[in-house]
Image (cartoon, rainbow, N blue to C red; front, side, top):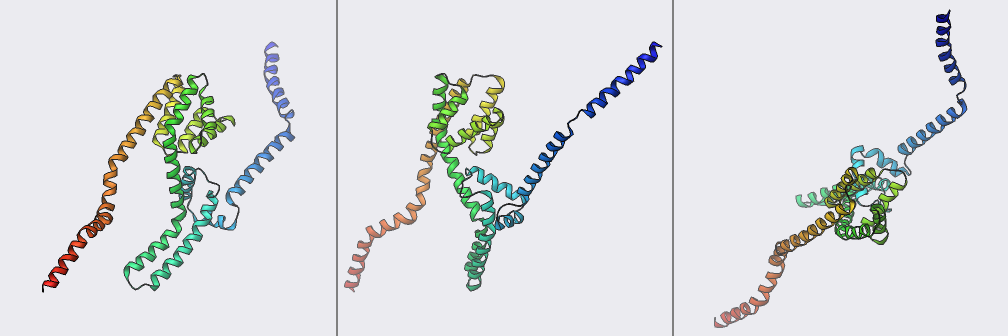
Length: 294
């Protein structure tokens, strides 16, 4: 009798709990959540598949995904300027490519020499890659400016940390008081932390948005210090010293390359003028004397 009662309880209790959980589920709330999620997914897919503007849609369709990701990387390295967003770049490439092709074929068709035809072919190819060159040039200038600002920024952060601020507070102070692309990247890193990203992810995202080896090594040092509990003031002191040494080495390297850089302008532009100015009067006098003697 007891075994029968125990068996009934073992069957009835799970069945009752399952029935209660099924019946007590808020189906309306669950349905509403699923609708919101599906609507958000559909909106994202529409936004990805149908960018704004006819030329932008054409640019997205004509550009391979791998090449579009490369262009997005170039836009990120350039600081994502408002005048050159990715959609505008993709929209401008087919237009400039078509204009360059028309101009290049016109030059090649009207030319009679192979060199001019080669110039026309170069113009045809150049039109398509003009946005790439603009982004690459702007990105190089931005990365160079960040490389020059890094040593001074680390010194400011070291002073702030030794004065009692935390690392994020020192970063915020350097971002607020600094000017230039490095200060903007520090502010963006702090904004990433404020919206919920972890510090490690924010630091690694800062390294991905830049192409400066010194900044990447600094980010790796900060991530390791945060992981293993190393004092951040020691890391900043060592990194600031290393950055100052590297900046001095870059200046010495440029100074050593300067004679080689000015050698070719000196040979082809300055020396011929000097020879003409110095030897010209003597050559004229010699010609006059020889002609008079005859």
